[in-house]
Length: 468
Image 1: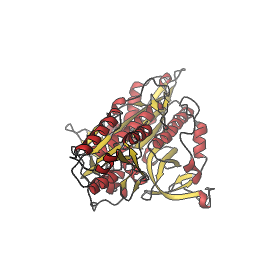
Image 2: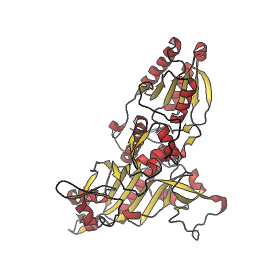
Image 3: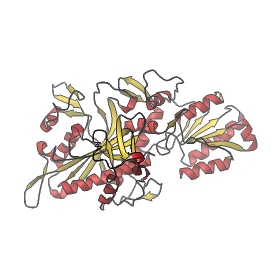
């Protein structure tokens, strides 16, 4: 069973949870053995909050300009985001595939994009002097797959996606994973007989995206946007507000009070009313903003900076026509397939979430994407009583399926608290000499910083009740 954003089970017509192998196993980690190096000072190259905190929290390390190694803590967040995307795509009826990172240039020459794409494309040759490229996107590749495998109108609709590394040779990569050259992306593609069917597929992804971001603790607003090099005449960016956003955005403030999980969603039904509800209120990126048609005024218009975390397009026959991707209709007529493209910046989301959720002490992870649920802090490692209590909590939380990072290091309390605030796990459970004598521990909720002295059983119950 899948789960809706409120944690309630929802089958969505599926018999089992999809792609369970993407879920990290329940792991209890001792920090004394965990590969985590935090930094007190901010590296000089880090100009925005997410880049600073990802480096300081030991999530990534730069390999070269715009290219990063993902270290254990950051990789766990990346996998949690990826897993949410897989679950929501499966719930919406999309099927996962995996396409190669390297593509033949001839395929892009067929579509006309090989020369038009520009210097952002990394062009290479193999040992046989065949021109190839490191894929910045996969419209050509997926259209070739459909062209070679789909014959009849009965084979449509289809909605395929993958999560794969991409490369775009940015002239000036900056802001860490927010604008790197190599990045992990979910790109999906729908294939339909005509515009009306393609619009239904577009609506499905529109709603699925709203639900995907909400599960991550984000308020992502769909905004009118340009299609860019992918093309098409129906396009929405999903944008979250952040002071370091790359572009100005304009939106009716009522959009920020809307809940993507407020509507009962049937992905087999008509989603146009939900689409219209969200798009009837004004929201546009700076490229599409037109003050002459914007009817929202004064304090009702939110003017802010935004970070794009997803982009969806309808592009009709833009790729099926040059690549000859058609199906046979009942009367024998050949009809070109109508396509749509749907992207989510998976690695970009790690930085975007931090931009939207942090404080002066460090990251504040939303529960669904946090690398661990609980920071278990033993203030006096080596003390027989403290060790016994901490190990007992460690075991009970593990048995309950809670992901715990146990700080068992021989460090000062101040160092432990600072590191745990920096990496931002949702709960901090502190075991100290004075508390254990009284049978209590300290429980802190990272978001908001509320602290309570509770009995050990009460603290466990609080965490387990929330996690369930």
